[in-house]
Length: 161
Image 1 (cartoon, rainbow, N blue to C red):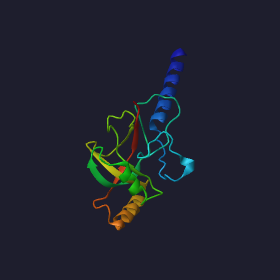
Image 2: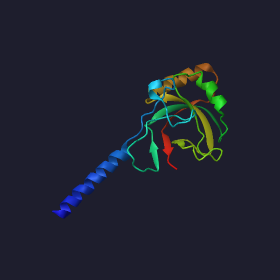
Image 3: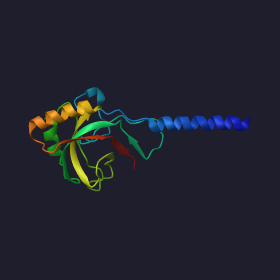
Image 4: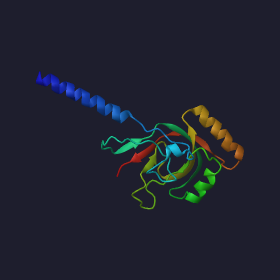
């Protein structure tokens, strides 16, 4: 009986841990939506819902999404002024840049998957489907301002320090 209860408790623990591990934060892509305020995120970061369950984690991922990479640069070289200028072109879609591990700032906790960490980038959120991303890329290409812009499927990653 005791062994049986222990096994049930262990199975429950594994299922709960798997459910927590599999959850991903919903991206908040519209920077103008006051109901989706991005508390705790910096202006250059793509924000997403974070768990509030008290479980210790090394990292936590957003849901997968598509972005259009507008520019690739040397690490830490995209400025906030540049990001804001581009954000003005796409007011309802978050424009974000990679600043993870820049300037020895230990509070830069957002990294991104499916990118080369040796480089920085400037990107615009392009949706959760490839079709949405292709439409966004067409809009961007029509501006003529971002030669080489390309679609990338990625996730934002909160790295706990």
